[in-house]
Length: 179
Image (cartoon, rainbow, N blue to C red; front, side):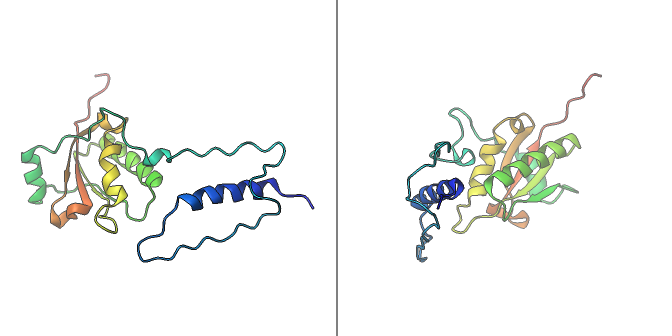
């Protein structure tokens, strides 16, 4: 009986993942045994070695010297807080993983800037214990290319727009090309 190389690789990857995952407070850890035909840790001939980085790309901290965007200027913030912005493009990132949220946020901001929008509302949510990963990572993503070129400022939204679980994003004016 021959061992399926994919099952061995899957089992090794699962063992690595299971070793790094911790249960939420109050939950019981369950670690099912992988269904593998063959001894664990044995790589089939011709199978590539399994390499796992310490942290996925999306969860690595921003590069040194990379600051989050400046706060929105006070006059603009007051207008937002008083509801004097007629229509503000809004996006809700609830329920998305980091990679999906980052991709959707990038497309949303760039499209809104191209359409001439000046202010956006991004709803990230607060997270389970008030420290949600999307809430924490969104300012970092906005400070990276290509978004940093179009972002003028960033501030926490007022309560009527989502409070701690939402952000106002001020966009720079579009520059006219070739004219």
